[in-house]
Length: 331
Ligand code: NAP
Ligand code: G4F
Image (cartoon, rainbow, N blue to C red; front, side, top):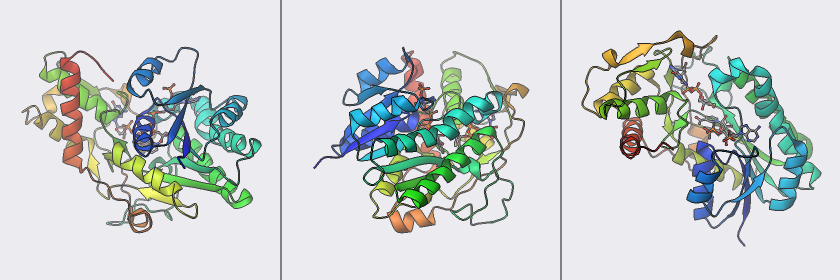
């Protein structure tokens, strides 16, 4: 029997990779798309024609109930969110409505449509919930039992989504799992995130299309993996007999300066400093200085392990953007 999945956030980075993975496993894939003329609609229809698109919005419960009725999914992956941390400081109420209460809307849509005992649910939780402050676990990193201390409206909203998912699991015996994912990047990363902003700028500098890049704080460190590896972990969580929460991470942390060094190295530039200007516009009211995850539980229970290491990640992103910029397209 083939399975059916409903993915919210289908136009995002993870939505792209997860749909590819599930299609490869012969799932029937439904994707929730918002807005009356979403600019990414044409791209999805062209590149992933196997996806059955359903119009809906995480803030609109009735649209989610309709989506459940149409798709009748075995698995729901809730990837939709206001996901940019800097943007969440500018629009904290929208972030709470979508990234926080939106999770409750999806869970309620599952219950209203009668799926609480049959549908398996994945919630996209995040390492941003840890906040980097009580980073006092040297060599160990944040695991599933570490303390939460979110440092942004995004992190706070995600923590609500995390706990309401656990609450529905405990209250209604739902097969609802949270993946606490550390940063994951790749060719499909939005241009507003620092890694893609850098890989794209490096490509454009190489091609003579721009002469510098403006960034905010260069000191923070992140545990950066490849998105294609992480969606496999999401799927594995929903294949387990029991729901649970898992950290997905590489167990390594690198600074933005490390990323700059490797990315500029790909175009033969050893000293990146002349090409980078700092602009306070990209600084945040509160920063997460360091994130380092401990994926031991996922490795042991799920058999999950990241494949792409940090240098390979930087290399593949710069290579992709060199090709894209040379052909004058950006996806
Ligand atoms: P992304 O590329 O920013 O995609 C976000 C998706 O959410 C887009 O498809 C967007 O649709 C959709 N969306 C936004 N508001 C919506 C609304 N009101 N109703 C319905 N859909 C809405 O994010 P991502 O990197 O793929 O991440 C996927 C999920 O994992 C997110 O929840 C993110 O917070 C979480 N997460 C990501 C990482 C990471 O490093 N990537 C790490 C941990 C957790 P539009 O195209 O219409 O805007
Ligand atoms: O790439 P970022 O915007 O990612 P951030 O804030 O770590 O959030 C991402 O990962 C989370 C998982 O931990 C996800 F939950 C979340 O949805 C998102 O996918 O910023 C990374 C670091 C920050 O410290 C930021 O201050 O880069 C710093 N930075 C410096 N200059 C910049 C810039 N970030 C962005 N976006 N743009 C800059 O110009």
